[in-house]
Length: 469
Image (tube, rainbow, N blue to C red; front, side, top):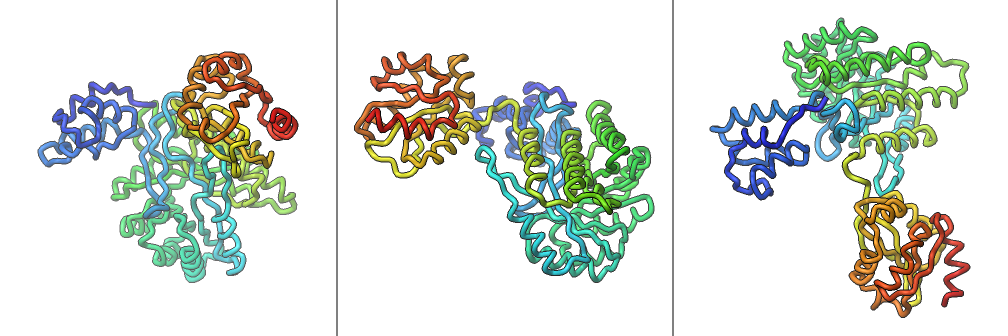
């Protein structure tokens, strides 16, 4: 799916002034950053000059992703969706994590509406140093009353800065709701074969992205996209239809077919962000257990996240169902070229003093946050030395010589711990036990081999540290 580019190809289209205004040492270095998507084309100021307009357009086309990027909302809370370069994650890092929108309706009472918005805003989970949150609010018109819809949209906009999805198939109702937030660039859901012209007029007039919807018919969906583009609409999101139960396999196949058509076949009519609506699990579910429907919505959302959905509309706000989804999203969109790492250096837990224990771990994010949590559970003031291993866990770093006695000794010396504590005792991870003698030789500190699993840190400190003192 990714266009095979070499820095030399991109370099050939740059002005080649080596002016360094982009922050790189020369144009070839900047070209390499462009190919790796680590720099924006607009950073090349000479390229923005009128005389280089053709070069700029050629480069922009060359670097354009197979799936267009669409922005919903404005300001700091705007959400970018799409912008994918690759079909599979191992080829290159995925861009713009799947946006998760939670629905509200225009038939909710003020109390219900505000309570739901509060739940959306407050959902947050810290995962290896990254806050996992919800992204958008989908306002649905279930009353088909333009005035009620406008009132609900206005109330939502007054109580949240999250981007909105306005959901109605009636152009009059959409116009009424849009009039309250026309400067906020909400996503309009949806244009169909029956209402596309009226919806397109609203999207063009207010500069809003719009969803093209053709349930279960990819041929009709491509035709609708072609019509919208010809009419002047630029920012489009595709909804090929979401089903649960017996229709789930067909839904997944449609999402996959669209993404493959965009990437492998170069089909421009398929090269737009994809929207899934797992909340359809709640439609026609009378008599079913709420937990069962929540679970059904959750696994449909997970499947569509893996199968290229760029935005999802959900109904449930249950933490047990949302947490696995946001963790899955975080892992799926992590850059496979770069291990998750934290900054190396010295960390303090509680208020350590000259008699406090000293430990070390690596800067692999999952290792660090797990160890940090277990030290906090011990309720013992302590120092933790974080050694730079390039984001690799303890056992792998030892095996790969990324964690050596020499590096530990150097980090220990640079930390200034010798001046902070009146002892020379270092507790090392059990998985680094084979380095203990070398560490003592290199650093001059006495080594205690700690537990192999950090969950044993609290008991180890309580049972062994005082004895060692």
